[in-house]
Image (cartoon, rainbow, N blue to C red; front, side, top):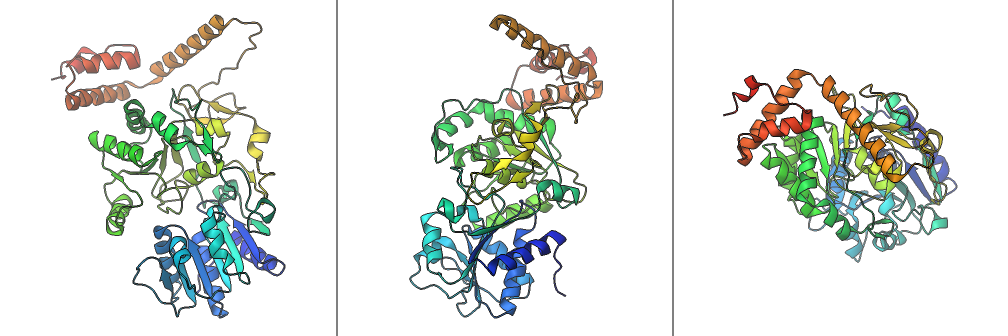
Length: 477
């Protein structure tokens, strides 16, 4: 039985075919979770039926394996070009290749169609060298974010390789059709500042950023905020580098929460075990850097931890997309945005985006039309400015008065009073059973860390402005 395409997939496929009549290279843009992998396998199947030779290019071994599974489910024979992989079959009309491996090979297989996955990476020298070996072949690039970190596009006018582009459906369209779920973004208070961090090629200096991110207090807050907002959600945590991501995983494990760490050197067998445990077992979350940023398809994930800052709109959208796929019982996904990338980039997940091949016309139309982003001071959820109340917790959004010629001290006092009012309102609305549960949690933390017996009560008083009732404290032993 032939696989069925969704309406927008069929529309985009027909548009690609139309453009190939005039152009040799076409870029297909669809949001993360739109089903680009399935559509690519479908195109491979169609090309094979017409006796075309197809070369599918990717930059990660996980993506090689993923496409092998997809093509295999189509009933197609294929070969793999990746290191010493045993699936080598140079006689096959369908080749799935790691870009690094095929770049090192003196001889490459013939192809009439090149499919370039994660095409926003395809303008590096390695990719360009490989593609240059196929001057007569049609080139189809696929990506959710057609932009480089330096802000340039992927078209020939920007030094890229693509002559035409097919803009697929928007995130909002896919949410409306229930092919994706919406995001609820929380920006925990006290986000570290990235002021003074240099940028290289449009992205933050990794070493300088790591010095800010990889600190015990921030890593500890990552765990505490997850326990507060998303303890029942399977989660993907994104660190700034391998050491930072490993520290996040270790901090969760020290808190008694089953968490895994994955990097590019994690053996395939171990990685497969982790993914099975994440999808079907007790593993609550996984921490990594690049391994789960692109092509990571686990719909059960319903929470994203952004424990790093990024200056790249493309990377942030890719990260958000990891939690957007639908799953039984899943109505949304949470984003714990510890560096307020949402506000810094002025990007919400479902904002409409107008992409361009040259990069210059790229704009976030939601930002243009909706203004800035508001942070609720009660639940710390984010949303476009405008509503009088938070759409998530219902708290009134205080209007900012015009403070004409107000001295700095008065402004700080106003902010302090505003914050205290919000905290007191939250304390009053918090049910007694929720406060009791938090006190029991403090007791467990004190026991695990060897704190003094009085620590839970003191901590409770700091949070709620009151001492726990005597009957709670009598069971403090």
